[in-house]
Image (tube, rainbow, N blue to C red; front, side, top):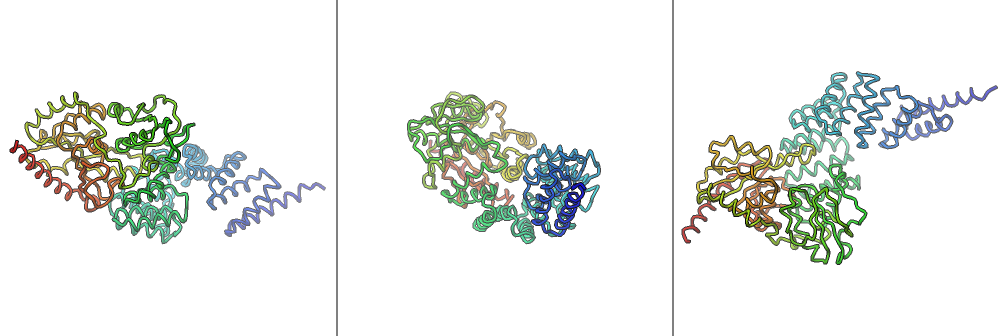
Amino acid sequence: MSSAGPTTRRIDALFQQAVALHQNGALDEAEASYRDVLALRPKHFDATQLLGTLALQSGRIEEGMTWLTRAVSIDGRHPAIQSNLAFALNALGRHAEALAHADKALALAADFADAHNNRGNALAGLNRPADALASFERAIALQPGLAQAWNNRACALRDLGHPAQAVESCDRALAIEPRYPDAWSNRANALSDLNRSLDAKASYEKALESNSGFVDGWSNLGLTLVDLGDHAGALRCYERALALAPDHASAHWNQALCLLETGQFDRGWRAYEWRWQRASLRGARRTFAAPLWLGETPVAGKTVLLHAEQGLGDTLQFCRYAARVAALGAKVVLEVPASLMRLLADLDGVDTLVEQGRPLPDFDCHCPLLSLPLALGTTLDTIPADVPYLFADPRRAAVWRERADAIARGRLRVGLVWAGGHRPHVPELRKNDARRSMSLDRLAALFDVEGVQFFSLQIGAAATQRDALRDVDRLADLTGSIADFADTADLIDALDLVISVDTSTAHLAGAMGKPVWILNRFDTCWRWLLERDDSPWYPSARLFRQPALGAWEPVVERVRDALAHEVAAARGRASHV
């Protein structure tokens, strides 16, 4: 008699036992039984795919993906397994692969709602929010009770700039599944986009009532407490998040920003190094054969590469550290974007300036620009604020001054920037960009101040708002002659004052030592600190802060009054000449 029969019966019995344990929530025992089945029959399809499903349920995403991949190699004709594999790949950030498996699931079952939902998540991860929205809405049309699809639809709507609709979509998810922490958290995210901070706080707290171990919920609640001015409470939230997940990069990042904003530079600079673990910056991290330098070893006699990162304003602010590194005896190579090459050509301390993307000379070690405060132990009292450290070209600036004088005819020459850049592909930057910017018409009160000629320093799509001004001549526009930041510096040099929202232009004016009034959002960038109208980074800067989120009117009123005072002072000085 063959032993095949008893072996098959034993495998079947083990498998049925595993399924029963799995269905009853005894996951450890079920896993052991599935593995016993596979020890006897390594290509047992159902044991393989269910072991993958169990691993996903247990939060072991990579292991689940491995088992599911093995299952589809045995038999790829099952839409649910293809869809589960798409789910796992999305969770691992492998969105292109996830999309391929979601499409395979839909090729097998075109009306499979779960696969449409996973397809939407893949498209969202690939920065295709409109396509993602279409997939989520298809999933909802097929299965209106799929709470996950309503929640994911909310995320796509936020990405497309529709936070009010996102709140409504979260409400639909919560009507189906009231204790759904992700939906409460995403509802809070959308409310935060709408500057409804107290409502956002309540929704985050609902998320945490549903799951006290929800790390993202604690971290995001911290952000909302910052919006409400409760920085101590925010730091407690970040500590709670990190106690649950010590390697949670976003919680470390949020903690770093809060520490820096409150002037706790020692801890803040160290926590700021976690930026490279975040998805939005991980791909931008530079790796070289030469080691990273964070101040731990002497650099005298060595060549140090300093390289720009993040925004242009960051480069303008932190390029000042080149002189400090050179003072340690190092030869400094500085790598920057093309638009800054002419401006930084004579920056103190730089031996070699290299345009990003061009070949680099040999160097012994390297440091990103925003790691230099950590490397050099910067405190509030030791911020290197020797301005100016950036300069206009005297010959070119004289030409700009002639043009500006001809337009101003003796009036105060004031540069104006009302909007920052728009970076819709990064959610946190999208919200910051919206909050730091305003429309030009909100500055209308400034144009009532007599004795002022305004000059637009606005670049980008927002510059076209000038065309709608009642008196367009009050805001001269010479930006058509600006090709890079060197040209911007030459124009700024020809002005008496720059008024700007928090943009790279404000940094440039500050680095040149030009009087600059910064119109600052309530949830301020960390570099402007708290509750002060000056800046230790830029002695010539004056800060006009919002008293609450989105409250630009009081800021504009204060700037108008200050500008009228400045005109009177200028007239007084002129009368004594």
